[in-house]
Picture 1: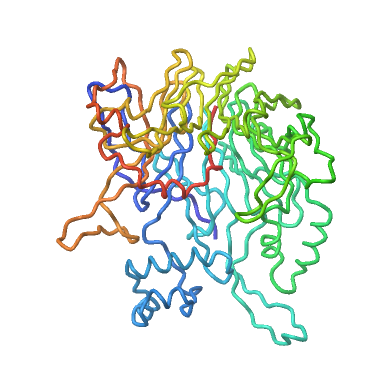
Picture 2: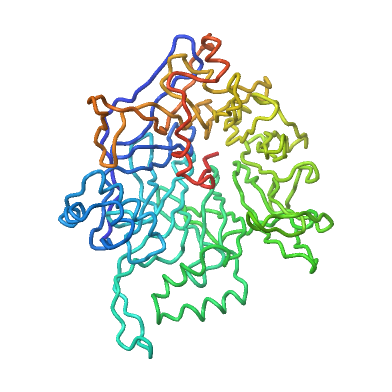
Amino acid sequence: MKFSPLFVAMLPAVVAFTGQAATYQVVELGPIDGYKSSFVSGLNNNNQVVGNLSNRFNYPIDLNSVDFTNSFIVANLTAAEIEEVKKGNINAKALTVLISYLQSASAVYTTQRFAATYPVRLDTKQLVRVRETAAVQTNNEYLLGINDLNQMIGYATTPFTRQSFTPAANATTPNPVTQQLWVPAPMHMAGVIFTDKGKYTLPPAYTDYGGGYSVGRGLNNTGKVIGYGSSNMAADTQTAIAKACDGTLEPKDLCYFRNAVGNAYETRGMVWQLDADGKPGTPQLLGFLGDKNSGKAHTRTDYPAVTYTSTPNDINDSGLVVGASMYSDSDDIRYYLIDQFTGRDEVYHAFHATIFDGTELKSFIDTKEWSSSYATGINNKNIITGYAVKNINSADRNRFFIYDYNTQKLTFPADLFASASTAPEAINDNNLVVGTTEAATAGSSIRRNVGFLYDLSANTFKDINTLLSCNSAYTIVTATDINEKNVIVATAIKEVEKRDVKGELMKDSAGNVLKEEVAVAVQLNPIANGSIDNCDSSAEQTYERQGASFGLFGLLALLPLALRRRRR
């Protein structure tokens, strides 16, 4: 049965905090009722915002697929509590145990699938279904961006359905038992484009042995979509998978999923052109920098081969794409750790910032000075932003860069302090850049992540929190996107009343409601003629506002870093 997208009811009012002397007003976009945390991923020039939710309250458990003899369940629930769960009486303690059980049993396909992320239009409070059609979501789904035509880009892992399967009889098991298995649909990941004509899957270049995969990363206003996906599979890998997945021991789709996920597919960056109906065509494959910027793999046989690939991160309306691709130098041999105990010498290889100009690839980062680099954003003036990585004080640090493609000028603007690690996310046509940086706490070695705003014209770099009123209830930890109106969307932390997994308020022994910090999606609107608040010196030194504590970063880790891309 197919279900329509879910609509979540919310009060029409939004919470706004302003100050008489601030330059940005904070408008809360989430979380949405029924979820604890919300994260922003992009906005357009109409102030339409997309993002993702996590930590669903009252997570629906399929008791028919719970193994109540599982050691984790038995160790954490009493026999009496287990009997109550079997009757459908699930309290907060039992639900916490069951959720942990589902998460730990992700590789056991007799167990219900656990969904951690839920896409949402934050400006309308509307949940969106990317691939899933079942009432209870069985996969992880993401929205990454929205353009000015109200077209949205996202991707989702494969949805599962519960199916009966009987293995083939053999000498060892002449009477096999029928199993109830959660079986995945083809394509372990699928990029999806939403247009006014419908919803379409981004087709990968290679689809054998499991349907291949695609991930949408971004889109512009002129019908182009960027991402990456499966481009091929080595012949020996094809042979091995075909032999293993003959359908006798488990369903072929499940076998393909278990064998093709990971490094089985060769991966390339891709660009899809949308037709008049918004349907994507066959992808154009993007190249890679290769050995010494040749676009080819190194040929040395005395060292391991390098996996060459490319990942686009942004595209402007002229179709200029920026991102990163694999670079190598076969004359530069370095020691690489394989795991924490062993390593070996290999040809130097790393992702480096790349401009994909049609079929031509261009690099602009000195690979001798910087160990790796990534271009993350480009505007319609061909100004590119990103970061390059260097070891500073025995730690890898991201150094923020600006590259003018028109003049081929590369600069590394100063951020909050010399060894801060900074990663820009987006640049608008006013040459304003937003992203994430580190702020230092006076008299301490603690570094805290904060959102930043850089003005290229004025060459000013600011912690966004200093642009809010001093009594703001929010601390901006990452700024994700900025449009041509200079509106910023970001993820903040905010202190709220603490709730358990069922959404019920938690209290201490004296009956006082406990507090906790949660991730919340926010929109920052410029205040006309606003000015920066003169907060007390300690607040400025520690880069803190009211409620500013960063013990929440485990929540931010729930969303993969790879999920973001946006409008243009």
